Image (cartoon, rainbow, N blue to C red; front, side):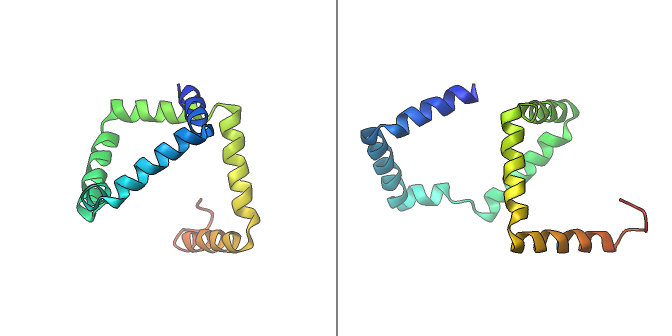
Length: 116
């Protein structure tokens, strides 16, 4: 299903006229202050979203369904390759690498020796 949507979106964006129409519509939407305010994620909206996600993950049946979907998506070799490439690219950046190592060391400080 996602592959069909992806292919359809690529077809739409490859058409210069369609691309221009979509771009103009998006720009017009962001130019409207009322629509812009509606789309903005306020601290209140963020709290509501957080609460609803916590509630969803707290339900054992829903949690199992969500986990099944996540696991199923990562079985696909193309998805695994994409995740792997992104991780390799992150670790290849010296600044990011130093931040990750520092974070891992900081996380280990509070643990007992031999605890992972």
